[in-house]
Amino acid sequence: MDLADKLMNVIVITISLLALFFLHQYRFLNSLISTARTLFKENLSGKVVLITGASSGIGEHLAYEYARRGARLALVARRKQRLQEVADVCEIIGSPETVYILGDVSNIDDLDHLVANAGVAPVCLFEDYDDITKASPAIDINFWGSVYSSYFAQQHLKKSKGKIIVISSCAGWVFAPRTAFYNASKAALISFYETLRIEFGTRIGITIVTPGFIETEMTEGKFLSKEGRLEVDREMRDAQVSLMPVESVEKCAKAIVESARRGDRYLTVPSWMETTILWKVFCPEIMDWWNRFMILVPGSSYRDSPSKKIFDVVNEIKQLLLP
Image (cartoon, rainbow, N blue to C red; front, side, top):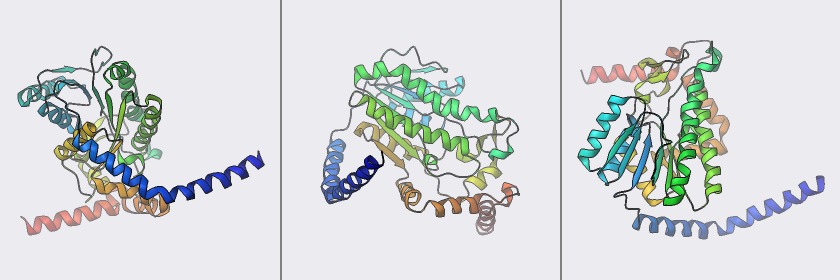
């Protein structure tokens, strides 16, 4: 085994260094393929698209973008009234047929795109939980919800050579305090669908979307509390999000649909968040220190965090200048 390890060290490192000489050619080929995909994007007219978590936020606006392109929609969420309202709008703006489903996606017959979007965000320090099971919805909804949807949809997607568009998050590699379970669920999605891409090959296309801060209920402060209840906490939102720019949900949804039409492997919205991958790979200690310094004050409330104080100061200045 020692000899094998030594040989692998030599062989793998040598091949990796040699591969750098072909990086330019590889990037050029990728650019050509990307251009071709842009010119020959998928026509969504009449295609069947299932969207989970479609009653608000990214899911709602994805429904509108698909509807404008003439797709037939199956919208899935838990809030019946909101789903019905979204479905009505979709039919008005161009969808030839829209149905809404409360939770169960196992009875879908035809399918071209599955958009796995449903999610919740527990926001609490790990040590502050009195009952750790109260955080389980993060895994059940964010991860298992997507897995079950994909499991039931895979046969239909294979027949149509369809696509899975999974909404993960930059939280899969940017680890902010108080969001451990949310971060874990999003990292799990990335690993799971990376593996499925290899297993499915060309039979099902997979686009992994990693949004940053998007204008949704979450960035308005709707979190899962340590008691397991969905609550709006604006002060917690100000500490966690602070002055970070928040992308419009309409722009995000449009970018996702266009990315799916091209058949992209990945999409990060906004695109500047891609640079955080470099920080995570090359300077992980700096990234960890920054998140801890800005968001977490050990032994104190989140109200004492620099991120919250900075937000409050800037907000007060805005009120003085723009009364």
